[in-house]
Image 1 (cartoon, rainbow, N blue to C red):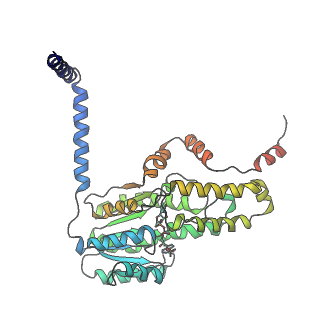
Image 2: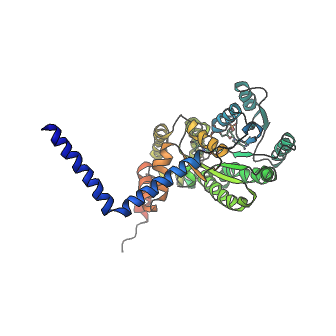
Image 3: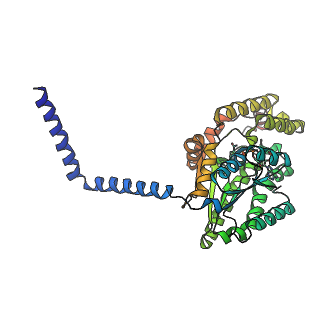
Amino acid sequence: MMQRQEEAQEEDLFDRFKEILTINPALIGSLTSIAFIIICWVIRDSLKVKDVCEKHVFITGCDTGFGNLLAQRLYRKGFIVIAACLTEKGSQELKACTSSSLRTVILNVTNPRSIDNAVAYVATETGNKGGLFGLVNNAGRAIPIGPTDWMDIEDFHRVLDVNLIGLIEVTLKFLPLIKKARGRIVNVASVMGRLAFGGGGYCLSKCGVESFSDSLRRDMQYFGVKVSIIEPGFFKTGVTSLEIIEKDLNRLWNRLTPEVKHLYGEKYFEKYLKVQRLSMNTFCDSDISKVTNCMEHALTARYPRTRYGAGWDAKFFWLPLSYAPAILADVMLKLILPRPLGYKRVLSKNQVDV
Ligand SMILES: NC(=O)c1ccc[n+]([C@@H]2O[C@H](COP(=O)([O-])OP(=O)(O)OC[C@H]3O[C@@H](n4cnc5c(N)ncnc54)[C@H](OP(=O)(O)O)[C@@H]3O)[C@@H](O)[C@H]2O)c1
C-alpha cells in the first residue's frame, strides 16, 4: 500500500516536471543559459598566469597592513617582490619576517625624488628581463578625517598628496616599465571612494583613485596593460587605528573657534568619539587576507577583474548602499552618525515668522 503511494507520488512529480519543461521552454532556456554563463565565468576567473618566478612586482606602503602581508605572500609564492617601505624600520621588520634576500626600497610617494630613485632601482633590477609585471599602489593614510568645517586646506593636502597625487605620480613614472612587460596595475581605493561620508581628503582621494583607474584602464588596454581596483570595507590596520584617529580628532576639535564649537555643542565631540569607537569595533574585520586575496587574484589571474569588493561589509552593505538613491544613503548615514547638538539653538535664533 505504502509502496504504491510512493510510486504514485514519484509519477506525479515526474509529470509536473515534464509539464514545466513543455509549458515553459523559455524559462528552462534562460536558466540553462544563466548556468552556462556562470560556469564559463568561474572557469575564466580561475585561469592563472604562468612563470610567476620570473615576474617582478612592486608594492608601495609595505611597512604595515595590506602591503606588508601582500609582500610576504607574493614572496612565498615565488614572485620577485620589491617592497617599498616608508621607513627603514618597516623595511628591516619586513625582511626579518621573510628573508634578507627580499628586495626593499625606501619610498615616500609624496616626494618626486624618492619616486625617481625607486624607479631607477626597479629599472636596474628588471634590467633586460622584460619590465615590471605588477605595480600595487597601496600606500595611503586616512587622517585628518572628521566634519568638513573642522578642516583647513592643509588637512585636505595631507591626504590627497599621498592617496591620490602620490599614486598618480608613481603610476606615471612606472608606466614605461609596466608597458614593457604588458603588466598590470592594482590600485587600492575604498568603499569610501564609492560612498562619501566623513569629511576631509580621504573620500575625495579614493573617489579620485576610482576615476583615475577607470581612465587608465581604458587608455592602457591597447598596450596590454590591465588595471584593477580594490575596494576594501573596514579592516583593522594602521589607517583605522582608533588611537591615531582619536588623537587627530582631538587636535581638530581643540583648534576650532568658540563659534563653531558652540554650533556643534560640547557634547557632540564625545558622541562623535563614541560613534567612531562603536563603528570601528563593529565594522573592522581583523582578517586582512580578504583584501590581499583580491590583490593576489588581480596579479595572478589570467583575466583580472576590474573591481574587487573586499570584505563582507563592502559586499553586502557599503557597495549596495552606494548604488541606492542618495536619499536612502543619507537616511542610513544620518542614523549612524551623530548630529550637531547646537544646530537647533542656531535655527531657532535665526527663525523668522512669516
Ligand atoms: N584598513 C582599512 O579599513 C582600509 C579600507 C579601505 C582602504 N584602505 C586602504 O588600504 C591601503 C593600505 O592601508 P592599510 O589599511 O594597510 O593601513 P596601513 O597599515 O596604515 O598601511 C598604509 C601604509 O602606507 C604607508 N604610507 C603612509 N604614507 C606614505 C607615504 N607618504 N609614502 C609611502 N608610504 C606611505 C604607511 O607607512 P607607515 O605605517 O610608516 O605610516 C603604511 O605602511 C591604503 O591605501 C588605505 O587607504 C584601507
